[in-house]
Image (cartoon, rainbow, N blue to C red; front, side):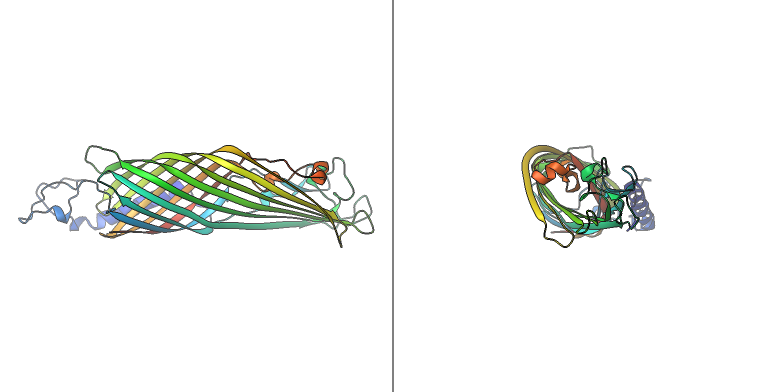
Length: 372
């Protein structure tokens, strides 16, 4: 699925609502008091056929409501890193920029209950998304050691200086698996405003998110002869984040059945971040020597969540939804970020923790809300 700008989606959804509203213009009750831009609903028509008062915005959510959406999110915003150069230290041959973390399917569900006319409590889950991307590069040119391969390793700053057993590779690959899940518990308070075609809601609650990753690096070299060298690095990172959030939502009525909403939340999280690294080196046919290292540390992480939604009320109990959402997180321990760029430290036990990564998860969603 190609990347689509959120602004373009919102504009298309708004135009669709306006078109639907104009198509139903004749269905709006015809009263001598009708004015352009003022809508009336059938339930406000008196027995004599006269409109008693103009339609005022009212959320369609009844005492209890449940929403289910399918989502298609991308994983973006990670800093670019190089993991192989060709012939010299500067000509990049393979890096994270070669991994395309495209749209992956997921699920978003929400259950809520109105406590009174202005207050509701909600619980939601967003996740079940996993990105799995791998890329490799090969080179069969003759090198200065008389073997095949001129791919240089990040463990030697890409051959500065070159080292047998790490550089002069004929094959290098990288592989990332990334998972994301999100859960929230919120109170929504509808703000008192002048009756009109808009409504504003204050949001406060708690959020839990996790981002777990696995990064794998593989390199094969025919040097030193005759056994060659195989290097393998496996990095597993975890981010378990929990904390409070505040935000708000603005809803704008287009016509009695259609409206658009914009929602934004700011989140401050305590992140239990950690990494585990396993480094194995040995001859091409094995066996190799393995070194393990790990580190865990807490840090503050910040996140933002924004969504634009267009809604159409098919019936009093069924509401359709389509929109675009983006979640932005800063202060993460990511798999490739925790690849230790130092051969000496890698061999003695990789125990550093890089926890300054950032990611964006964003994409379209569509679903339905059922109320009762």
